[in-house]
Length: 494
Ligand SMILES: Cc1ncc(COP(=O)(O)O)c(C=O)c1O
Image 1 (cartoon, helix red, strand yellow):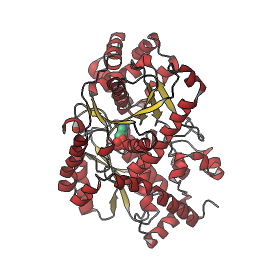
Image 2 (spheres, protein in one colour; image 1 turned 60 degrees about the horizontal axis):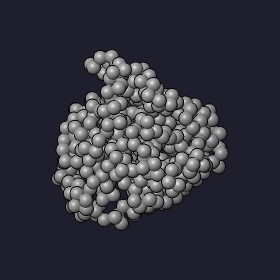
Image 3 (cartoon, protein in one colour; image 1 turned 90 degrees about the horizontal axis):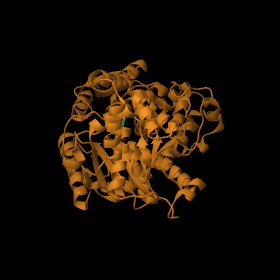
Image 4 (cartoon, rainbow, N blue to C red; image 1 turned 120 degrees about the vertical axis):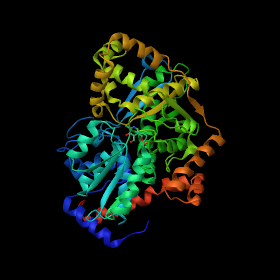
């Protein structure tokens, strides 16, 4: 890490003036390390408030309350066999309780903070640009608002209205690029235009910034490990296991956008070497499955290229999911007729009440987890984790749109969708990756990153080396050290 002392001095002064204390990655992973002084401040602050103390809520372990919450052991939902049709245990870790309602605020933190504490980004003179399909630029705009720095969010024009409305409310500059979800090339083109024409802008490209993957490796990996240990150690669980054997951490399924979240799978591999790391994407844009392309409706994922930060060598399986299935299940989980149907089918009411905690890509994760359980014939000892990245809070307008375009949702729709997409979810559109398949995905990066985005072939080759990733993830201790020094320099923790 090279340090720019002059810029660092500016940033320290700005943070002192605004009362900004920066959490370490270790604190985000384990909030019991957060100082009491911060916890006292959190008691008077709402989850989405523009208050710098909310940097300490960039963790999976927030109490699930709108205001004044402190920390817990994480929030998770276990999906029972009556809903999934498989004996394996599928567990979702809940992202709704991050500020902004989505876990991407952590990825944004991972990208900006290492530069902030090394003086590589000057909050007092520079603008932070967040190229995104939605939640990442919301997270970046939120982090910037806390730091008092100008944010520029770039996102495709077809993303949900909630995202645009919120960005404008928070005071971010918003640039809408042509197309949907998978039109990331258009976002990159806009970034090049900004590089050429706006020298005061710094681009934090989540698709190539390792801070994104590093954050997930430690913080998302950490919460999954903790929840798994709780499940494995809980008395009720031991009683339930028919064969009397221990639970296995068997799967981690993540719908990839920037491929930051899937880096948690790299961490899980270190504690459970046989874990299957599954990347899921829309069948309508099967880039990992078939080098395919296309538009789709699973907001937040699938970008017609392999992100630079995706360690494809650690991905075991690719599962493509039909976006129509996700939309159908979104209606099943959220429409009154769908919820009534599920309750009548014997799904416990508290769980039915929690289903709106799943945004559209979370439903994709759930379907891919069911397919994974089927494909590998997993049983009740196998636990598959999925991130529930955001919730329906960000997609209310979509429900309205489908009511208008597809008509009212009835018990008949609910029965069809439950049978077809949950109980009947089959193993089609899946591929277990061989060594050569992974190498092909790695090579596929060439066309985006070397030909289009000016990366070197040498850098690309380094990404195939497992040591490269070990070293990348290990950087966090130096970052934490710098963060501690930074907080000392502001003097705010005294
Ligand atoms: C709703 C949603 N789901 C999934 C993802 C994909 O996560 P990642 O970019 O870490 O691969 C994103 C990313 O923005 C998202 O917003």
